[in-house]
Image (cartoon, rainbow, N blue to C red; front, side, top):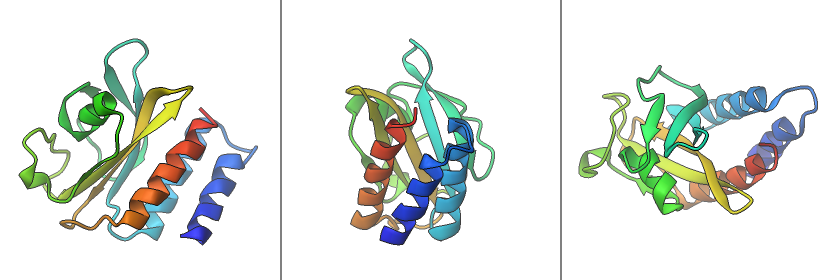
Length: 149
């Protein structure tokens, strides 16, 4: 994972790309390097509204470009301010299905100046694929992303 962190840091620190391009490159790298990451994207607070708006992502198109706070896993993280790992989405009553192939999801909040401003959302086509190492990597990544947004 340390090699992957180095590569992610190099993307985030690149002076050649704007923030949106950097986040898209981060999504592509995670998608390429971790086989069970099947949809990787960012959602951000939509202005003053209590909703999230889809940012850069890699994976199948989604209808969920706006997510109200409290709805689905992403909406719950916007309210709870805590990482949410869902080993099996079929066991989760407040789940918004993006794809029938999705079996598991992890969502990690991004904080800027103490406020929850967004999150990274990862779906997997496997049941219970996410490890403690994945969680640690994504929580580290969200701290790094907060420095550039």
